[in-house]
Length: 86
Image 1 (cartoon, rainbow, N blue to C red):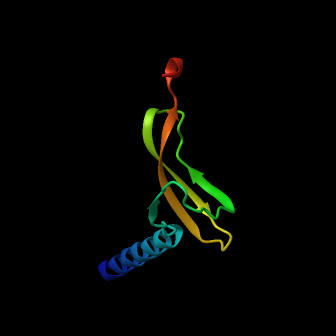
Image 2: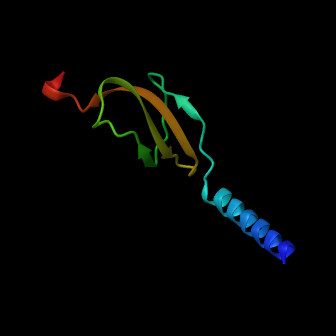
């Protein structure tokens, strides 16, 4: 009986690990944006929410290019969460 419980537990743990690894997409490497960099953006997937920050901060944008490859760039931006515009 103990061996059946151990086997069932190991089986459930293996299935959980496999399902967890299948749900996680590989994150693209982050590229630092430089002025004049050519960006091939077909669709924006995700952007940093700037509404809770004030001042200059790093932000990220993940997008798909025309080849449907995901890319992430990081750039500096002024947050939009400032009170009284400063």
